[in-house]
Image 1: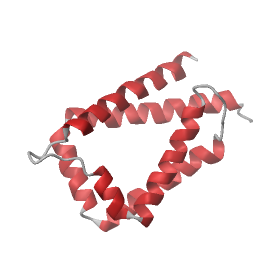
Image 2: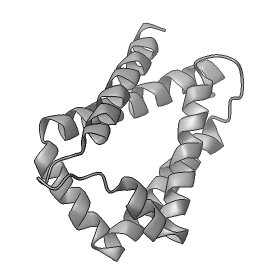
Image 3: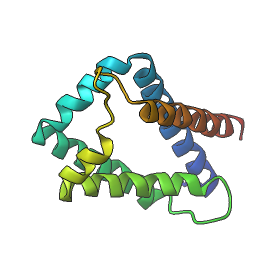
Image 4: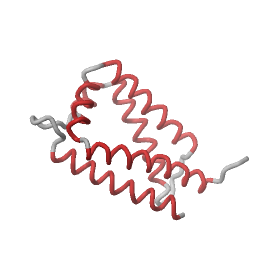
Length: 136
């Protein structure tokens, strides 16, 4: 069975979009708990390495199966795959830089204002992706 390019785009948009909606919504609802989890992950080199490999693996799955470079919403899936690969590679080769970039916790133990704004933007963006995927 062969899958056409648009079907694959819709598949990845549904999977990644729903995953990101669930992940960002849970981070917004449980900000303090996720801030604590984030801090614990970055204090454990083994978890940083495993999460980096997971990022690279998922990104490569997307890039290998969906390397679409056209002027449409479909390129977002390809860019997302490359972002996953690059983020994972950064965690593998320069975890100290990734830690500085990702550590977005305020003194009170919750996410910073900018981290919260970023999560809200990601949530809205991924809701749009899911909408497109399920109405296409």
